[in-house]
Length: 237
Image 1 (cartoon, rainbow, N blue to C red):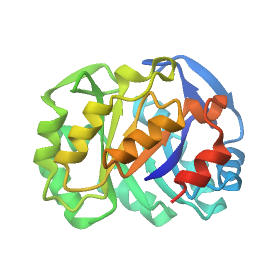
Image 2: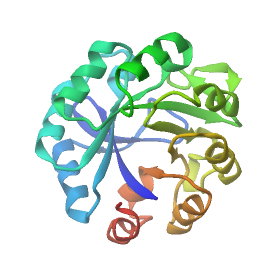
Image 3: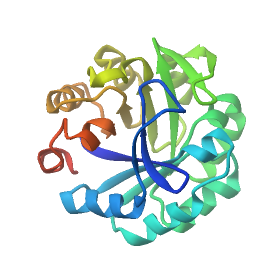
Image 4: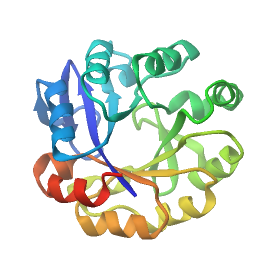
């Protein structure tokens, strides 16, 4: 399994949000490129970059993302407000290895089929989940479809993977929803990326044991709850 540091962008800065909130920042670092380079120095070979402003529809951090992609040799997956073919192409042309699509992938399955055909192996569908129900639009809406039903619908598409964030486990790094992630990994025909609530190496090992391909880690790395040197050594590739 691969461990992937999260690099969330807002207003040109790297931030970490309070559990379950799109508004309250707990950590703000004004140099996101420096953060990206630091994770590479620790030994990580992948990054997860999300444009929170684009998600909210309040501008974007496109310049910062382009700079990050040009400054590091790690594999970067980019997401946040990507809802068109043009934005997918731009991210890939700028050097992203994978593109993460959330809201439109959930709401326009025909478009997702077309995009996954045009960009096979490059699209990751993101599903934010609370109690197995899918959330969208910055966690403000509940989608009628359960996450396992979504995964079954996605099977057969040439996706790079599905990213499942257990929003209900974000608080205080209490550990992820292992039964959920195991069921998703058992159901999916493509790699599963897990996020939400990760707080220890044991969480990562438990996910690996359940067939999860990658774990996206935010707060636990930024606060030192997980030692980045140890995480990178065990789960860098």
